[in-house]
Image (tube, rainbow, N blue to C red; front, side, top):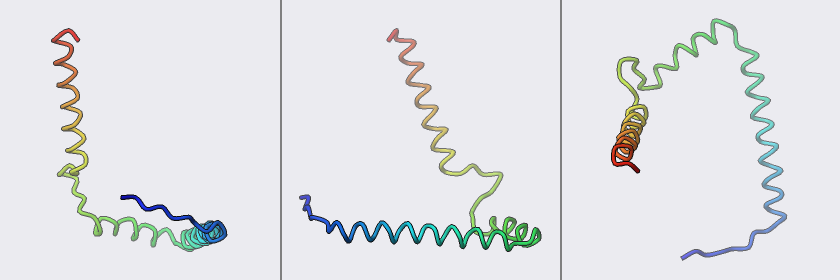
Length: 86
């Protein structure tokens, strides 16, 4: 069951203004942080990213495996259609 509720237009408008202000502040802080980085610190951060992931070059990601399987199934379906004359 879906329950509908009337939104307060002023509250929504204020929320949107606040969201925009927040997005601008986050962007400004992001730019300031990136500009403050030295090349050495940037490299350390970049190289440290692998510590936070389970990324391994010798093992394909589960997403990649699923995509390959899906593409194989699509190809098989198209081959079956072509051989049946559809």
